[in-house]
Structure formats: structure tokens, C-alpha cells
Image (cartoon, rainbow, N blue to C red; front, side):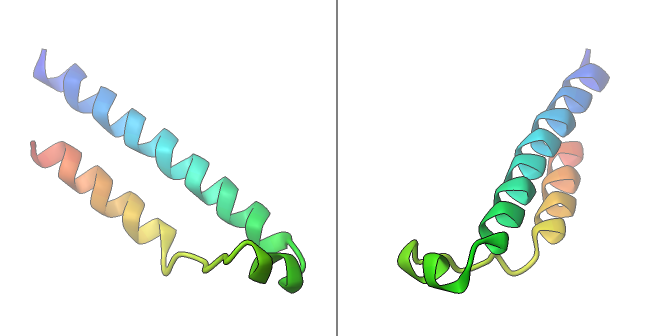
Length: 60
């Protein structure tokens, strides 16, 4: 069923985005020295990615 396929894709994208947000929060909470050692550059906008992923998965 196409509807359930779309919902499954949206759910999978949401789980990936949630994991990415959690990782970004953890990395941003580290001291600046450790962030530099890990070469951490925070992503520009994680929520923009979520909306793009959701819009893309629905259009398919």
C-alpha cells in the first residue's frame, strides 16, 4: 500500500534526523578544546534537513 510506504519512509527519515539532532546536541555540549580536537563543525540547520527529508519522502 503506497500510503503505508510513505509513512514508513517518513518514520525512517524522522528517526535518522532525531539521531542526528541528538548527536549534535552531545557534540555541542563538549568543551571547545575537545570540539577542535574532533574537528567538529556543527551542521547549519538540522531542522531544515528534517523538513527536506520529509517533503522528499512524501513526493516519491
